[in-house]
Image (spheres, rainbow, N blue to C red):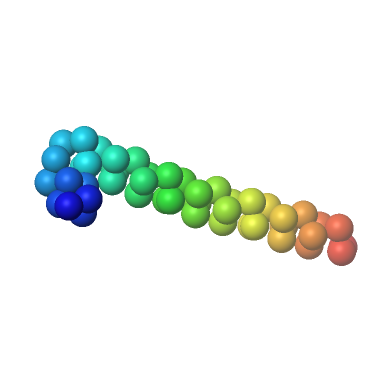
Length: 46
């Protein structure tokens, strides 16, 4: 029932879009932070 509501109603689809958006933003920010930390570590080693 919950899966039906998630994929078939307007509110469910909007909720799904928000969930996917939050996951994508979290992944991108995590990658940015990781890259920035690695860059900073390389500069400190020089």
